[in-house]
Image 1 (cartoon, one colour):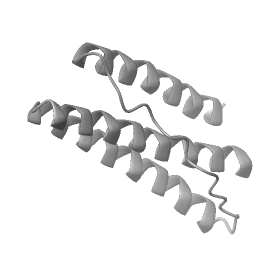
Image 2: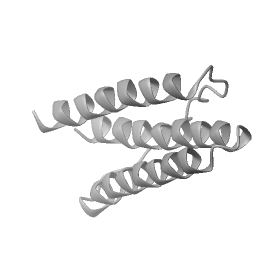
Image 3: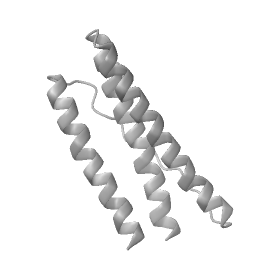
Length: 101
């Protein structure tokens, strides 16, 4: 379980990186509202990751922090970004559901 929780910490931090990448893309296109939305989502993912991180430590577990994969930085359209973020959220939620099972 500890290993699975550590993998989830990494997945949450990757999600934050991914959403920051999306935010940066929106900033470069002067889409400030979309950029802010994705920045807020990135912060939420960091919060999720830290909650799991703290949970591991509170139970005297060992936190491991493997490398965070580099996210995509080029996007064709805002629609592609939102479709990608939706798909990504379903994957991460599935991982959480698997942990609960």
